[in-house]
Length: 385
Image 1 (cartoon, rainbow, N blue to C red):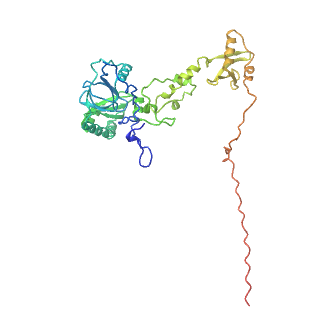
Image 2: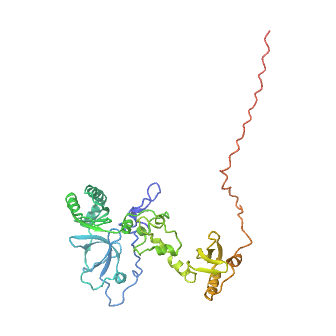
Image 3: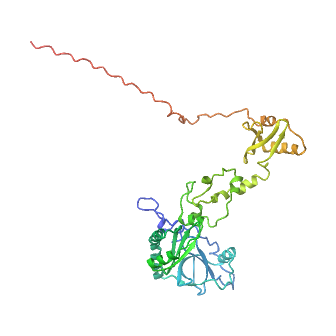
């Protein structure tokens, strides 16, 4: 799926809309919903649900009541009610699926405070809306210059205009509380619009700006991830990852969201696995766990007096020794168990495909000596008598 602005250019390369998955034509939007009830008719006597879901810039979605009984479908541009004036958005969902989404977002369908839809957007509304969207980059750059001149410790990450162009919302991130009263006065004077400041977290900032992660792909939060779940260092410990902040942190500076993707699989595998801090009592001494491979069901133990020598044991062998230790019985040594895990047949690397050696560039090249051809002496011409 792609929108009209994501099509290929003249040279065959993809142009891209550069909206981080939130394009205005709703073709490559990460928040696009497939209405699987669109081809089904309602039962006799039942009225269609009068609420619709409307999407605005980035990941902002809100519910509106269709009081005018307009015939709306997904992708229609509508003018909606705002605190002052009106806003312009795109319809993303209609019908009974909206009721399910409202229940998920804990919004009561009979709530009287739900704003309403004024009308379908006219061409004049769309022109004003697009004109405001085109000004956002210029205004964002200018507002950053004003904030730097006032020496405010904050970062303005995004600007969102209201549909009628009367108001602009500035999203910013900051470590501490910022007094931006003078900033609002200067920006209102420079741009001639009403200003609203809204502080967001670093994850929301990365979602709006987009980027490339350490995996080489676009950030999950800017392409398909719609909610942020808490990520703790326990997720890295369960997966036996090194607690290195530079490796575990994403573009936002927080722990990567992908640490939760495989966590359930690791927790399932750890249910019947010995704890990592278990101790094995043997006649030779106490052994401590040094390393564990969850999916191969293998653990490595070493004696207290010989920490550099590791012995490989399987999960069943460790559980067997722990059961004996509970009965106050000690095994002779770990070497007896580890000897059963050593495979006599050792596989060696064979160059079956015919690849070149990896050290072929380490050997000096033999320079071939060029043989100099000896030229035959020219025969002297006989002296003319």
